[in-house]
Image (cartoon, rainbow, N blue to C red):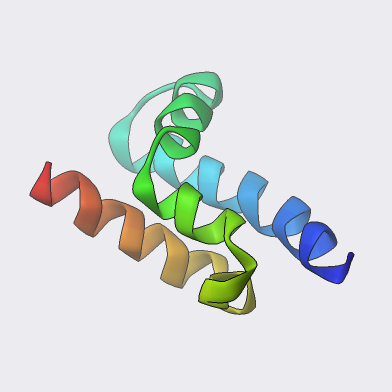
Length: 68
Protein backbone atom coordinates (compact mmCIF):
# COMPACT_ATOMS: atom_id res chain seq x y z
CA UNK A 1 0.00 0.00 0.00
CA UNK A 2 2.79 2.44 0.89
CA UNK A 3 4.41 1.77 -2.49
CA UNK A 4 1.34 3.12 -4.29
CA UNK A 5 1.45 6.30 -2.21
CA UNK A 6 5.15 6.76 -2.89
CA UNK A 7 4.63 6.26 -6.64
CA UNK A 8 1.69 8.69 -6.60
CA UNK A 9 4.10 11.28 -5.21
CA UNK A 10 7.06 10.44 -7.46
CA UNK A 11 5.35 10.18 -10.84
CA UNK A 12 3.99 13.76 -11.11
CA UNK A 13 7.46 15.09 -10.25
CA UNK A 14 9.11 12.83 -12.85
CA UNK A 15 6.54 13.86 -15.46
CA UNK A 16 7.23 17.56 -14.79
CA UNK A 17 10.96 17.00 -15.23
CA UNK A 18 10.40 15.12 -18.51
CA UNK A 19 8.13 17.86 -19.83
CA UNK A 20 10.68 20.53 -18.95
CA UNK A 21 13.73 18.70 -20.34
CA UNK A 22 12.12 17.68 -23.63
CA UNK A 23 9.96 20.82 -24.04
CA UNK A 24 6.73 18.86 -24.31
CA UNK A 25 3.37 19.10 -22.53
CA UNK A 26 2.87 17.27 -19.26
CA UNK A 27 0.30 15.09 -21.04
CA UNK A 28 2.90 14.07 -23.65
CA UNK A 29 5.46 13.57 -20.90
CA UNK A 30 3.05 11.31 -19.04
CA UNK A 31 2.52 9.22 -22.18
CA UNK A 32 6.28 9.01 -22.73
CA UNK A 33 6.87 7.94 -19.15
CA UNK A 34 4.05 5.41 -18.87
CA UNK A 35 5.15 3.66 -22.07
CA UNK A 36 8.78 3.44 -20.94
CA UNK A 37 10.68 0.55 -19.47
CA UNK A 38 11.48 2.82 -16.53
CA UNK A 39 7.78 3.11 -15.65
CA UNK A 40 7.42 -0.64 -16.02
CA UNK A 41 10.31 -1.16 -13.58
CA UNK A 42 8.79 1.39 -11.17
CA UNK A 43 5.49 -0.49 -11.12
CA UNK A 44 7.28 -3.74 -10.24
CA UNK A 45 7.61 -3.70 -6.44
CA UNK A 46 10.41 -6.26 -6.61
CA UNK A 47 12.81 -3.79 -8.27
CA UNK A 48 12.75 -1.46 -5.28
CA UNK A 49 12.80 1.48 -7.69
CA UNK A 50 9.95 3.12 -5.76
CA UNK A 51 12.50 3.70 -2.98
CA UNK A 52 14.64 5.95 -5.17
CA UNK A 53 14.26 9.68 -5.69
CA UNK A 54 12.30 11.22 -8.54
CA UNK A 55 15.57 12.65 -9.88
CA UNK A 56 17.20 9.20 -9.94
CA UNK A 57 14.22 7.68 -11.78
CA UNK A 58 14.18 10.64 -14.18
CA UNK A 59 17.86 9.93 -14.90
CA UNK A 60 17.04 6.31 -15.72
CA UNK A 61 14.30 7.48 -18.06
CA UNK A 62 16.70 9.85 -19.85
CA UNK A 63 19.28 7.08 -20.24
CA UNK A 64 16.58 4.82 -21.67
CA UNK A 65 15.61 7.53 -24.21
CA UNK A 66 19.25 7.92 -25.26
CA UNK A 67 19.53 4.19 -25.94
CA UNK A 68 16.28 4.11 -27.96
